[in-house]
Length: 136
Length: 206
Image: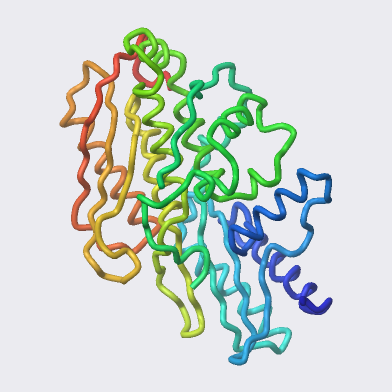
């Protein structure tokens, strides 16, 4: 169960991450099962999950933050990750939470032109009538 | 261990796992609609975003490739487009977590194999007419310093010297991998598995 103060901390971390140059997006952390359950609930009319995208939790070893981010290609994944780590560490230090374990994963790189192009309406569908067979 | 630490059991992956419950057909329809209304479950899925990026680049070659493909091939199952779509679906999954240099002991930074495959696939932008069908890493990408080979299968446009195209693509892929990772890449193997006739194609029209 996430305590209200924990949720506020997660939201503050999320805000700090978004302010880092090179960060294009933040993705929800969590396993595929929880994501699919969320998606299914939304299909059934439930409101989108408004819980923080960042995970903030207390472990026996101390506080822990986890985030999955998308970065701009020009900024570089490694460099942007370092900056995001610094931003989270500074926030936690300011709140008296240091040291904190910080786990960051870059899950998408925004290459720019493709993403811009994808927002144009396309007139052709590339998908043929047949299904792609599962690989199992 | 979490969702981004999964091994790379490509033979056991299902499409459901690849795209967070969405199908490549749904993503294609979503692109048709101009990505509106915004579907939070698609836009919030890294796998879907990687697949959308690749689909978008593929569409930039349309209709010339589709026209050539559908006029020459007998059935949809074996078409070039289907094989590319299958590759996009497979490459979009997160795969293994590649460590990034950590600035502190308590820091754990990484990037998914899927994200790196996505940015490698985007090298298509710089070599007009080339389409990457599949991308994979041979070697243990989860251990810093381990030798890794990048292997890509590509389709190239008819009429252009393949060695030149391959060298340009190799150079671009190398630069992209070095920008985003510290992988010890010992080689980039490019296999041309298809040559496509692009109708009315002019350089730089993508």
